[in-house]
Image 1: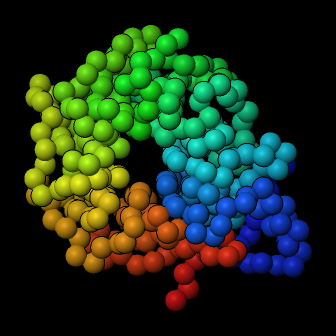
Image 2: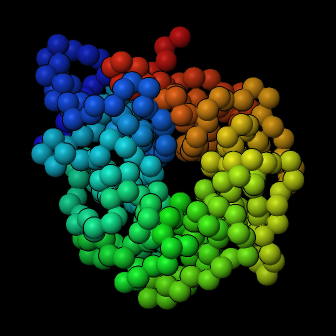
Length: 318
C-alpha cells in the first residue's frame, strides 16, 4: 500500500498515516539535500532528497511518496528520470525503482547484487533504461530486472556518475574521466573519451556535449573535436541545465548562466545549489544541499518556493 503523507494540510485524521510513512527514516532534518527534481506528464513535481525520501507536489498538496508494504523507495535518492508515464528513481542503497505516474504505484523491478547504490540514470532513443552505480559499473533494464552491461567491468568504469546518449553513441562520465561506447548494450566496449578528469554530470546542448567535472570546471565536446574547457567556469560543477537559448551551470561555489556562448556568474546566486530542472513554463528550479528549492522565471532572480522543515517538504508562504 502506498502512503502519501500530507504536509501542507496536517489534518488530525491523517496523523497516523504520516507517522507510518516516516517511521523508517532515522535521518536528521538537515539530511535533506535535494538531489533531483522532475516533472511528470500531469504537470506534477517530484522531488528526490538524500535522506528524506521522495516527495510529490501538485496544485493542492505536498505529499511524501512511500510504499509501506514494499518499503520503497529508499530514503536516499540521487537521481530521477521521467520516461513516458514512468518515474525512475535511482537510490543510494535500494537500487532503482519504477513508479507508474498514472496510478502512482510502484512496478516491481528485480534488483541486482552490487547495484543498490546508484548515481547515473538514463534513457536512450531505442527505449533502453540504464543505471550507473557506485563501484559496480553500469546495468540496463531487461524485462523486469536489472542486468550488468558485461560480466566484468574494469575499475575505471566502476563509479559512474552520468550516462547520456549523443551522436548515436552512449557517453559515460565516471570518477576517472569520459568514456564512449556504442548505442546498444550489445556494443558495450567503452573507449577513453580524451578527458582525464573526474566527471559529475553530462548534458547535450544542440550539437555539443557539455561535461561537468569534479574539480576542473566545464568542458564542451563537438563532433570531430577534442574536449575544450569553457572559459570563466571553474571548480567543481554539480549540474548542467540546457534551456531555451540559455544554459544554467551549477557549481560548488557559484552559478553561471551561459548565453550566446558567453558565461556570466549569477549575481544573486543560490547558496548550496546542487541540482536544477526546467518546467513546462520554462521556469528554473534549483535544489540545494540544505533542503531548499528556489524558482526563477529568468535564471537570474531566484525566490524560495519550498523547503524541508520538521514536517517534511513545505511550501514557503512568506
